[in-house]
Amino acid sequence: MPVIKSGAVVADSWFRLDDEAALPASGDIVVSLDRWQRERDALLARDGGLGIELRSDQLADSLGADATLFQLIALNFPKFSDGRPYSTARLLRERYGYTGELRAVGNVLRDQFLFMDRCGFESVEVATDGHAAAWAAALSEIEVFYQPAGDQRVPVLAQRHALCPEMRAS
Image (cartoon, rainbow, N blue to C red):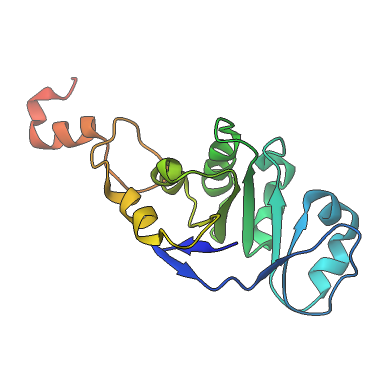
């Protein structure tokens, strides 16, 4: 499937490895949490990038401090109404200090892309690559936010206080 990153379709070097498949000596692979837990040492010893895919019911605590060992963490949205991967993304970034690539996979919609970005996702796997520009445009459709998030956008209340210092509570 095509991957959109920084508003463009990019080449994807990552290969999803089935739990029963032989472990290749090199190359960028994405494994399940179950395989990671069974074969941690062998996975760390091989050459190539190491990624993991978490189902929506496998939360950030499933990885904990191990999150920093991965170059890619893919969070699966099984249906568009399942918001648990948003929370997992924020926790990976804010609690566990994950700085690698967070990728949204599964049933992701263009309308959710901005919110995924605000929670720390850097890339998204989409069904077709023909609409990359529309996906990129989603990042600028809303300019004012009420809540702080994992990104650096300043919420509207903080903006108001910066413009009108007398509004600050004393």
